[in-house]
Amino acid sequence: MEKYLQSCKSDFWKEVFQAESDYILRWLGGAKDILSVGCGPAIIEKGLAENGFNVTGLDISEEALDHVPDSVRTAAGSAEKMNFADCSFDAAVYIASLQFIEGYKQAVKETARVLKSAGKLLIMLLNPQSGFFKERIKKPDSYVNRIKHTDLKEIEKVIAGYFFVETEYFLGIKGTQIFQSEDIDLASLYIIKGTKLF
Image 1: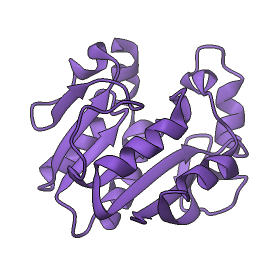
Image 2: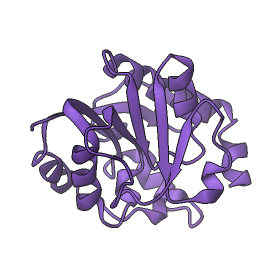
Image 3: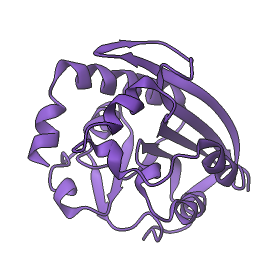
Image 4: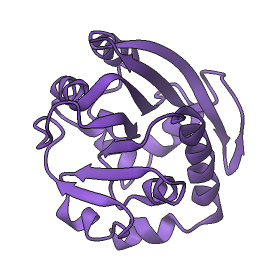
């Protein structure tokens, strides 16, 4: 965890997190109570809280939650069995976390349960077609090697069972350069935005 937190302080990752934060903030309009699933040390979530959102971070790792800032409420637990009441949140985000959850289908179902009527969902998925992903997966110690699900269309299909969805590729990365791109070979993320169906 310490090594990860140190790497997050690099200019490259700060720029990535800023681009992701800006995207999330644009999308969150009208929401107040936000759930971040698989929040880790809540680096982006801290920024959301600073922008006036009530943020709850859920993660299975107690170690990660120990590093979450006080401005973010935390809950230790499984995404597949969330300990929240029905209709608790206006919006939920998965910031490059869903693909690492073994039972992601159950996690999506649980997310729909804890969202209010017409609640918003934003899922940032790592794009396996991107140069960024292909470079990272070559490194044995890269977090990308812990990914469990790479079939983006299958994930989208599961989400569409509970949400009206829109998708786009986002955040071009080439080496240490970060730029706007929806090119499947350059965009590091595949984003699924959803509105709860029922």
